[in-house]
Image (cartoon, rainbow, N blue to C red; front, side, top):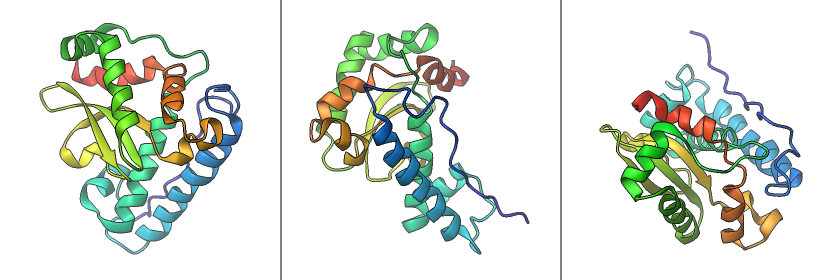
Length: 198
């Protein structure tokens, strides 16, 4: 059976394209070193295990310990980095916007609640917009490498609140990093993740 080799996905934009909101230096470390390290570690850890030919989501759902941590962080970071674009921001359209309004009352209320979840998560982790099996949206916080796939939730959007995501740019000012996050969101990508549930 062929061993599945997990690879660092290419960024859909130039490494300096998100400035001034996320700097080239931050991406060089966060994407180029942290994300790459998770990929390298995962490939080493799954060798000669039942997960060596499994896809990433299967590994996340079925594994634990170091294999889970590295697989989940590969997924989480890939999911995070792929949802940005230069001159992003604004608000979503169509069914996702309707669902956000239905759940949170307005897009602005969603944005406020999501930002608050990011600012108040203790320690390292992630904030997610997810859909459940009934296609209902909710905001969840996860610690460390934890991922909503393990709770049978569909990830739609994520915010990385590990310090290495923002410390070079905003130092300890996590709220400023979160404010910047909204300026580079690629809503086309986010909407495409929700579309299959529409």
